[in-house]
Length: 115
Image 1 (spheres, rainbow, N blue to C red):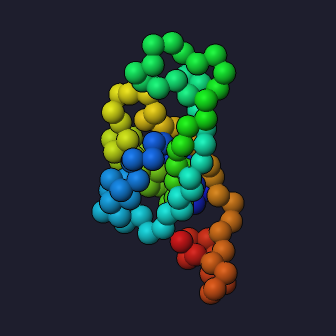
Image 2: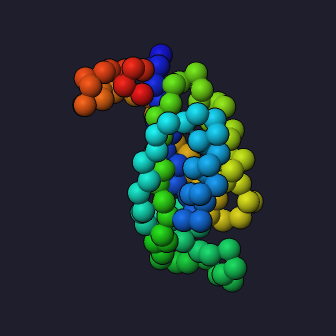
């Protein structure tokens, strides 16, 4: 089993501050954030729209990546779900990947030491 895992979160642009603060409180030490465009199964239909879009509409989102110790995955996922949940379209998606190797370029540290 991998000792490191990547959590990729795609969510609404307004969620970053609260999520960043919550992750900081539980000791997550690094985060990468990218502005992206995308849509889910609703094809970019907004919550208040009367009809579902026929053609996909790409909406501004943010992709947040964090690397954590695999044994902390469940704890971090619960925190992320609680922080993002509104029950409305656009709450987001979370993906979890195993990390085979990680190297801190500056020091040459590898694996958990590079975290």
